[in-house]
Image 1 (tube, one colour):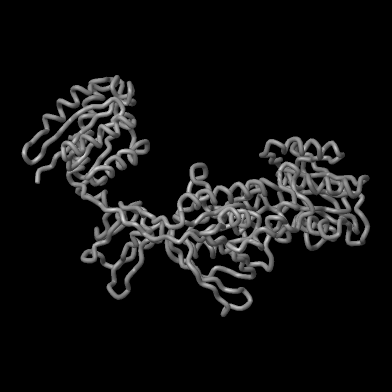
Image 2 (tube, rainbow, N blue to C red; image 1 turned 135 degrees about the horizontal axis):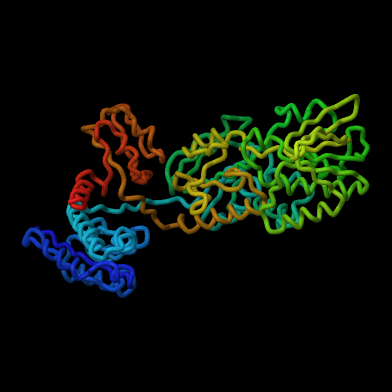
Length: 566
């Protein structure tokens, strides 16, 4: 059977039409006709991505009984999916189509029209050469499970669970402690600008407990999680009784493990654990929440207090972002309960990222709180008197005494984050927090489809941002994992030839998605096509050449490059 290739050049308004000679392109491409083995139909259109343009393409494919399609237009990022969908409406397999970018690669970057035209002709010839070596691929549909596992029952995990649970979707909420709610339940109040008071948070906790579509497991950890988006097999174990296990299947996993605070006892210069009446911010929160009072160990209210920001920042190498605001809150606690108290806040840099933060800072200052910026700081004790010795930004050394010292320890990844990362095959960043797929474009996703990260599991965040994360992940899962709707996994995946595989397992070490497993009996590596995303790492690293990528074979790329440089 002869190849019947349709080549369609998009004018893209003036973007391409004014920069290259489309008439010459069509003449040159038409001259490549070699009937009966290769028949080329070359035409132009004003805007192929438009509704009219798509209808025109579909009609051309059907009327001319095209076996292959080449479109010379814009970037594949813009409209590759658009033109593949046009093919799907016809009898033409969408993997027998090639989009050649003559806008960004020719029209927009080559000022000379003749040169741009010649380059466009080269690239279109390359596309024609490649497309004849492409093979039809078939999309496979997989059954999916709409249920979701949420690891961590702090405010982010709770919000995600409430966003996701429904009549046709169960949520399994796993918490390693004995109760849900996380650290926020230890507070008396939260920041005024966060828009959520503790009454509402308690209502959310109650809503989780009363929701019949949310199953809560406390004092529980995830022991096993294997599978892929739409189909994960989960095994839970009870922390105090490892024989007590639960197993079920879910379609997605949300990691909401929160954070821990740096232990200031490991930083000797602050005197924590050695000098009396030095507390962490969380200890003050808990004391205030339980008793309504902030007292010294003697039972008396302090006459003076020093609040030290950035404890552990140098050691961790990053700002914890939320500490400044909650230290302002603690200062206001103290002023409310002990109006005559003398308060000094020591900071290296103030972090005020939200619109209302500056106002909150000014309000705290106006209540009589002093702020001192330091370069170096340490806590000393002489006899029974505590001193804060510090170096100011101008290099001058000073000291003041304080009856109570409150430290703001750096936020750090929750204990066990590394184990969860290994369990789910997701990455940690250089600070130990879970790594997002893309900070701006895909901030709650990970490198593994179907595994998401929210709240302070990802980096230090306040309550409002954690809730926003939870709602974002709810939106992603609800739109991608729909009850009764089958999933279509990636088609352009890798394959490993049984005959050429030597069993070296190099591919297993470079696969970012955990899509390759080793068959011990046959001594070969095998790709799980449901998990593979076709990144090509295994192809590039395979020493025997056993691995290749569908739709990106060596023959296809060779033919394209050969014609492009001719």
